[in-house]
Image 1 (tube, rainbow, N blue to C red):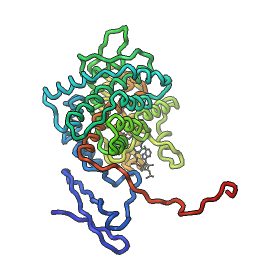
Image 2 (image 1 turned 60 degrees about the vertical axis):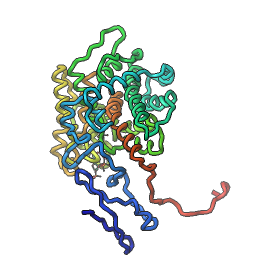
Image 3 (image 1 turned 90 degrees about the vertical axis):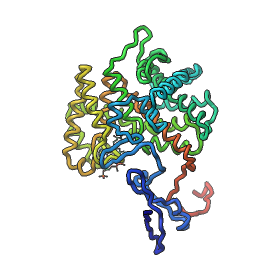
Length: 428
Ligand code: CMC
């Protein structure tokens, strides 16, 4: 039975259909609102109550702590799938058969070279440049070497653009690290798996045989899967809105990287480890920092805590916490920062301020600890997030283009000056 929402504006009643999703979520469809009310809009800063699209990719229930990609529970995917398989699932909608996965991987390998001219662009950056800025610029620069635009109605063109970015993005991401560490650029090895190859491109030394510890590989794979999509978050919404103007896939992803960089979004993983380091260097008293986070006159926030959607717990944080403990134990690393992280989260979870606001550790609270154990420099943490989020961005961009969504163009409530006469400069 169709459901209806009634809205009364200045004494006049209007009806709007209520749409129901496959998980029984309800949404009032207000697309006719401005027309029927002759100009009334809604306002919802930060889009806390606004659905920007219908999507069949990721389901998230923030109250129950549920996250699913294409219907599969994140816990099961993190346990049983690998990152490339998960990427295929997100982008194409179904888990691949062995042959489909092999073809996807082969096609990616075929495209995994980057034009040598790109190195000149990389050379132009100072060594001190933040890798996220470099990655965003390099991704955008890829357009110069692949100028053809994608016809969203052509399966072949769509597939080719997807394979190209899946192939070249890890190369560029690894180069941002090698630029920082001063290592010669590496194109990886066609005989390695996707994540193994990423690791090689990042860390391989020209005078040493490449080896990867299976514990490290497994942890990296898991982290990438956990970051692979998160429905309409800030960077994904950016990718969709940029793409809605029919800007290409690479341009849209470059914009998504910039959005992800911010400390309230993907940049939080760097901010968390820096915060934990600060606490350690300040004597390890995390109670002092909890007090700062609660003090409204202090801008300090507990990084890695809170989430726009999860108001119970972040299921990714649960998986990552266990993985962090395992990786550190397996690698025999004693990291005092992990003790501070444990203490801080235990105290915060008992504290009325955090309890009453439903603030729980999020995915970034523990991911930095693993990245650090894997020898990844702090400034690269958000780049790791970007590599993980790439298939999500691609899937969301593809869905938006295939659904022929209109250009994203919100309204506003103007609160500035009303019409006034121009004042000549000598009279101001
Ligand atoms: N530390 C202290 N207080 C906080 C925190 C925090 N980390 N997060 C939220 N609050 C308080 C906030 O001050 C507000 O209090 P009050 O109601 O008294 O004004 C209340 O909780 C609600 O916060 P909000 O800012 O309205 O919530 P939001 O949904 O707009 O923000 C958030 C979500 C993730 C931006 C925010 O929780 C935050 O800044 N967290 C720290 C940064 C972080 O860890 N970001 C990573 C998010 S997960 C990775 C990703 O998906 O990008």
